[in-house]
Length: 389
Ligand SMILES: [Zn+2]
Image (cartoon, rainbow, N blue to C red; front, side, top):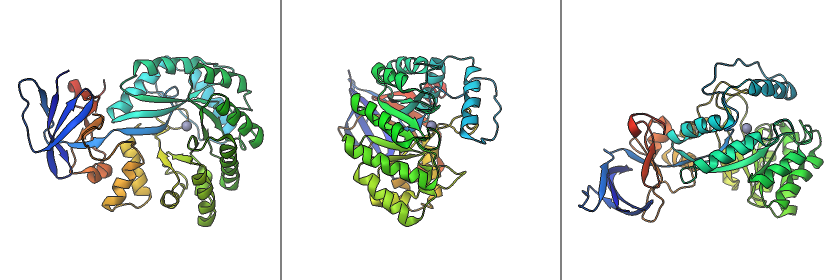
């Protein structure tokens, strides 16, 4: 494969030429260098280099994009909402595979190349959703990294999903999920026993949706940290939402924060603006691993959401009153696994946008002009004249 030069790439205030070989950035030179005869090349026209994004909470199988409009009702109780969601999902006309591809293409067009998706599993739907998402994962291999959580949305105990969850783990899911062991399953210990039992048996991670409020949520997280220690799963367990962390005092938040950090339990926030959010600056200063996900995109739970991680990271910065340069860059780090600036030897996976610098991009969430994976443009507004792959 011949080398490719991407000229006039903005990194901070300067323009650089990136030399790409076999999906890797092999060299970075300040200034403009034209390709030799044996090299390909294209001009980035001064667009800013931005690392690709990682979205740690989404549901490829549950959005309504491409369907007719579905009306929602205010969520009065979780069991009622779960029943309504079942009915709405059953009314969709597109296949799960189509749905997964639609959302993946949308996320890719926003510059997201790594995702963690929760996929519904229960005795009614069996492995139907999972099989479709596993198939689509193969279709996107080399383009997007897709981690799959087997997710008993209707409650692991409540919907008697242990058997089908085990089949899901055997079929290739990476992470064991659950929802509100206290509030929904009404059995914190048996729920966590099943979840951590499956995770240990299949050498998998754990990621639990925890909407349970205040001290119920915090108690569940304490028990999760203890189960993590007993199972030796440090660094592989996550709490999604963790709304309870936003409803306790600063000293209580500090106490649970230290317990989570000691066991390497991550928290994944979707940066809610309709309720109190966990104290991200405090938990970050304690050293808790914090990740961000976009979660809802036009689904049974909410008509809002764009699947755009950059927009969501900007919302995080705004909610935390972060306006200083270092704080804006800090917010970006919650949404990427990659270094913020390129160097030789890095994978050639990046996004090009019209912005002065990364701080400006964080604050303005500009249109993604090019999304480059493995050294090649794969999406973005200028990709084949418009947007998605
Ligand atoms: Zn979710």
